[in-house]
Image (cartoon, one colour):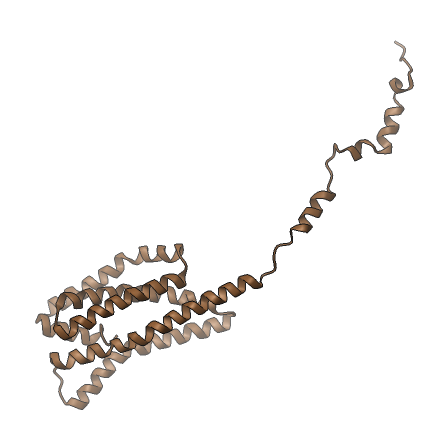
Length: 232
């Protein structure tokens, strides 16, 4: 939120000079995430969520690298590219991470607590950028931003992303380990009971049924079996 939030709009206004260009950049970012909403959802349904989140972390690192190179040199195409890539990364995290938490939680209560903590952390992150802005305005006594001030401030926001990357990797690895442990703890299916059931049940025309005393007595009591020719 620090690197691509409200301070990012102030930086674009200084570089581009007009609010219309700032709006065009934000519109492009929003349209990109909208167009990729369905493909990202299909990706989460087809592949493992922890694996997708790990690959998505690499995508986020690419976007952060573009911003890290673009902010100090004021290279606009790098800044806009990094902003769009991070928007795609954030869209996938917002969609997939709550599902990952619900699969990891062992009870409904833990899932509710985890989802509440996630929303609290997300809200705190969204307010961190404007809070930094207010603090710096109070320290510098200056309500107008310059490129020099915004350079180091926007780059400093990427430090939080550097801390986020190993944490996301750790969470996905723990989820996969928990999933494997749950699969190993499940008892194997007992196929011997099914085989016993099938062997005890005999068909109707089996030899056992033909050799029953009732069938032998009924066959011996017939006229042909006694050698008696019926009179016509």
